[in-house]
Image 1 (cartoon, rainbow, N blue to C red):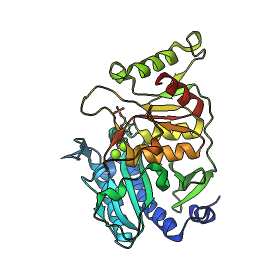
Image 2: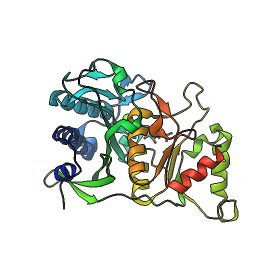
Image 3: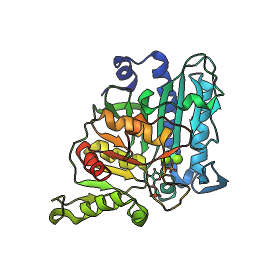
Amino acid sequence: MRRLPPVLVEDGCSRELVSLIRTILAACKEISFRVGQGALSGVLGSTLDENIQGETQKKLDVLSNQLLKDILLESGYVKAIASEEEDTTVAGNPDAKYIVAFDPLDGSSNIDINSLVGTIFSIMEVDKESDPADPTIFLQSGRKQVAAGYVLYGPSTMLALSTGKGTRIFTLDKTHGSFLLTHDYAKIPADTNEFAINASNQRFWTAPMQQYIEDLLAGKTGPRGKNFNMRWIAAMVGDVHRVLCRGGLFTYPEDTKDPNKPYKLRLLYEANPMAMLIEQAGGLAHTGQENILDIQPTEIHQRVAVILGSKNEVEACLGYHQ
Ligand SMILES: O=P(O)(O)OC[C@H]1O[C@](O)(COP(=O)(O)O)[C@@H](O)[C@@H]1O
Ligand SMILES: [Mg+2]
Ligand SMILES: [Mg+2]
């Protein structure tokens, strides 16, 4: 089985980019170890702090953020970082040309129940002359990502990665610490009969989304003429992994539950990297109004509606939004 670095070199990645990805993965291996140790690692449970988005930080959120932040800033490969758990961006090496946005631990509510969690990352390039302390260097559309990926800490630790030449899936061989290529070129089937949504928010969805889900639930005798199955892992990283492996539609749509927060998922370090992985595997990633990768961000912690997965099913859902 092939190891990650030669695969990246073959895809034409610069030596600097390969080193940067390996640096991120070094932190992820450490997070994988801590997650695997569970209660023995002493990092289960919450801290007394909140992040800038008003969410209580879990101990593992804070630890994962610290590991990624330290290793990236010490490496010299990044000009700046942006993280879910940092109020604003953090400056790195002024001479570097890459910036990294990350969700250090996605699926925080799963930590204490030994369920799926992961790390999501997005890598972009900036002018060498740009100011590392200027947060606006992160305000680029998802199309500008040079690489995107996630590491899923599940029964096995897996990496899904795209550098713009398809989406590949690697599995961490814990006997020697290398990510080995186990699923070359993920291909999401265009049709599916599986969907993922947090149905407890149903009464807060917009009318088109209510109607779409109602029609899915109506099954074989409804307008869609077939039965659908539902899954919800409560970690985007786990739901997107399932979609990459066997297709499906995943959505966290707009809702009115909290008028100040119509969307849940964050553009720069959740929606954009996942959208790149999905598109590179033949799927579609949309907000209902526009393609996620075409959004021009206005803020680091901006949130968006997400509808992604099997192309024909996402298009069917979008049909309700027109
Ligand atoms: O709690 P809910 O409504 O099921 O939301 C789950 C969603 O929230 C998230 O956990 C948000 O990510 P964080 O855990 O990084 O804050 C997504 O991964 C997931 O899809
Ligand atoms: Mg997250
Ligand atoms: Mg998180």
